[in-house]
Length: 461
Figure 1 (tube, helix red, strand yellow):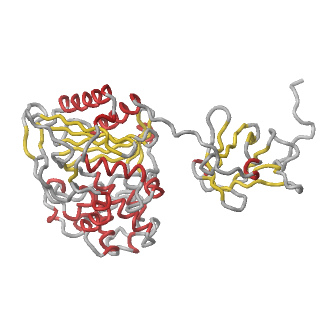
Figure 2: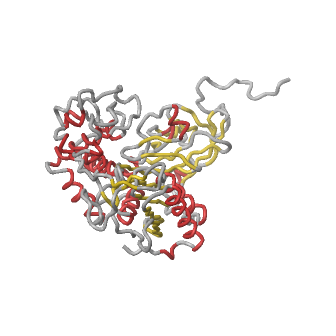
């Protein structure tokens, strides 16, 4: 993979390199590699290492831990899109006999099924997967800790179940399905379940001395769909571009956007921290940006993939130590550096291809009671409703072909926008999920629920 370093300004490249240099030095990491993606392609790669004369490049493998979960989630969404299952299906419908089959597929994807965070002892990340040959060994005697659907409780065994689900429906191993349905179509030739040279070794760094200890590299067995994969900054840059845009060979843009949408109830601490979870993706609000991606850790390795859709910038950070640098914070900073130093150019304004008089009749100023809103027709064929002042409910609407429109987001997602016409055919008001929007505040000529006082507007005297 050729990285076009010249795509970023020299000052931006230096700022990126400085950030990972600080992270490697202060985090005491044997090595740290990073990449930045903009406009769907890698535009920068950097590395810092403790070995003189050696700098790992974008082809060197590191273990990526729980970023593996995002790959597994993509496989499950593919099954849904093919009509082989529904996200609301209980697991039992497709994978019977687990003992936790009442949990839905969506709950497993969002970590809301109530499952325990880890498998029973011994510590699964540092012991052979052969110790847990069956799903019952992964789940243990008390797999459920919380009521399903009530709270987000991160669960590694939950993704082991999703990997087994993929195997059951496809009739092939998770590894084989992963290779055929994601890795090969996206050209991720340096992503694998086992390390392939050149790859980094995993190290533990002594917390009170500048000394290192090699970490064991275990095959996770049944837990592989939760954290087995090895990859490179080059491959993960391609994967980040896919997560931002979708790829019809793997998963379309609409389904990838669904993965990036919050799907888990947020607890009080999560609201304060600005974090939640989608379908196989972590979501956080940081530095005024909505960031989506996933972190990963296994003994000897830390990883992060982070993207900002609004800025069309993503970052990947990989390091080979058990603790030290915070790859998620570093990746978020790399995104911020590029977004602030070289802000994205907006798409050129373009007029509508065709002007529909019936649509033009709807646009302009409307009032919900005394709240003023503007309704615009945009070049993508949608209607956009937003308050004229301050903050408030806003949404875009898609035409249904019968004169009505359906909300796409926010409070009005799925709600019907219906123009109500007078006997002469002119628009009297808009009915939006039973709310009446009128051309004037409480227009007496419109069917305002509760009626309008006959004396009209008045002063205090």
